[in-house]
Length: 191
Image (tube, rainbow, N blue to C red; front, side, top):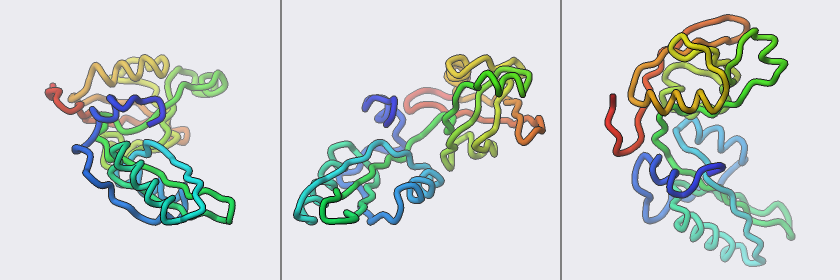
């Protein structure tokens, strides 16, 4: 998973890795990822398999899915003679927050008149999704204190795992508050 070690992915898994991932033929990588994210799956990798024999390429993609501990492997057949078979690998994670976020640009900070972070992808079934956080929301405050930047927001999320927190959000020019019941990591007690 981008920016996460295999150890972190293992710690965030919703359930132990299956002996054999669910294998499905994909339609569109972007569309499938969007659909699976809504079901709580997170993409952990992409494989490209250049084999003249399509059966061997598929077998290799499935083997790699087992190796990486994927819950689901999506297979995309080659588009032409020289194209590679593509496989995407997904894991259902137990995410304490469930959305990625980024620092604001200088222009965004000036427009908002405050520091904060912007929400990116929101994974279905997570605390962020249940609190109705949406991609594009600006998080300005955490428990009524200003959010300075991405690293400090991440630290606040980690410090408050298992607790109810209030996020002050700016969405389409309107400021609203959302209560989020943060989850915990596997093996950590709720607070």
